[in-house]
Picture 1: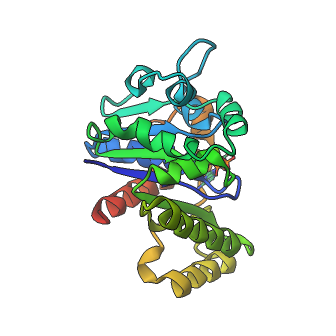
Picture 2 (picture 1 turned 120 degrees about the vertical axis):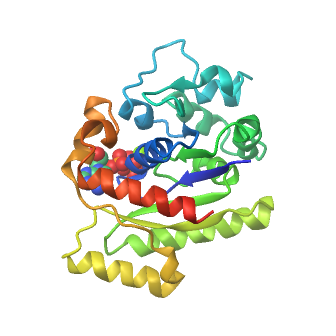
Length: 253
Ligand SMILES: Nc1ncnc2c1ncn2[C@@H]1O[C@H](COP(=O)(O)OP(=O)(O)OP(=O)(O)O)[C@@H](O)[C@H]1O
Ligand SMILES: [Mg+2]
């Protein structure tokens, strides 16, 4: 049985999608079988891989609502070991219509069950909220990674995430492990980057801070070409950092 890792942080623009796409690709380049599930109504994971969703095409929404088998929504990518289930705007409707339905929180976990044994890793890109899709994603996961930009309010978001993980364990009896915090937009010479990493280490321990992802313009450009960093600029700092992170994630199992 593979691991299911949610990539989450309530703060928008913290590097969740960039991490989901490029960590998934890095693991696939290392020969692992990887499924990336886009649980965000913004649909950025699919777009970043050059995969567009046209009306009538099946997405995660159909898996959750219309009884469509997840296999029917899986798309291939440039790597044979890297697959994608696209999200999309209809997930926002799902969130709105099922916000107070407790069984909806468990549905993603139930619907992804059949997929877990086929992949070494299922990665879930989550939206920048603590709404239904994020809660669903955490309940469906064995682990969570928190990409975090050094910012003076960043610790607040992290504390909130830890509270939510505690709540999930208590109410759903499903333990989700905080695999670590990934410093994103990292600038080694910036005092704030170093100070915030210091604060996370003090709070959660040395091993909670994973390999940082440096600010790298190629990481921002690659999605507009529908490419991962390994296709767009395989020799960039971004490619190096995500490969390094993938090695670390593999060793944390
Ligand atoms: N290390 C980096 N260096 C430079 N640009 C980056 C880096 N990481 C992400 N970006 C860019 O920053 C923006 C936000 O990143 P991303 O979309 O991954 O964040 P997100 O947390 O998924 O956002 P949202 O909360 O809206 O889902 C994007 O334009 C992305 O290309
Ligand atoms: Mg995103």
